[in-house]
Length: 273
Image (cartoon, rainbow, N blue to C red; front, side):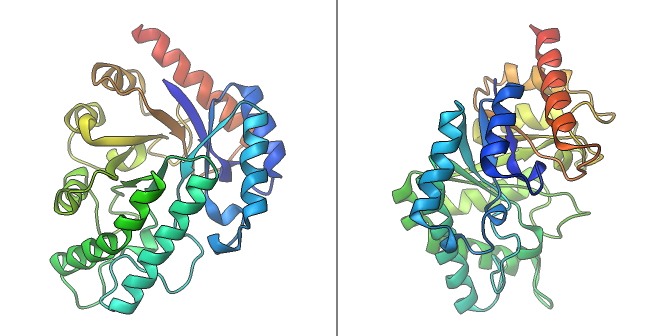
């Protein structure tokens, strides 16, 4: 299992310091939220991208990819009924893919609940059509970067659209594109009717990335979710890609979150080995 952590966990830390701490704690990868460097990814210069990547690699870290893709952006919407907005969103996704490639990343996780809502007066089916159209506009250029687009279901408490793995897969099936995959997140899966391990086994073949967190928005081991059966399901499913820690509650502090989350995950894996 390859472990990474999302960089926004270390709020307001300098990137080099983040890399040093993450590597020292024993992680192999770092996942980047673009807004931690600029509100518009195009503002991250080629020189900055080279430096970001170099600082990670000097610590032995792989930049896994990007997430929180549209956070803090304005005027972008995956599900907009306005064709101009959909095209602008598609163009921005391509810009993100190019930045991801420049950083050495291989995947992008699309969560961004505020930018995927069902438009007022629209049906879920219409929102799906809009989302598919936006992604079809972006994917030909995204494919050239070699970056995989991972679609993330989110809990109903966060989003009113793409709330289950099945809903995400229905969109991926319509796209039918090799540069797309499903993203699974423990917190989000905890809202589904099926147990998390069952969902992992059911969808492992389509899963391109995995986020580890608790249903309480904290890190693995900081709540009631038992990760032993989760890692058992990942092992049985031959999932050998990244497991990234992503939290939304930053207490007590980033170092404790990162250290104890990794320790707990390794303990869980050891128990099934």
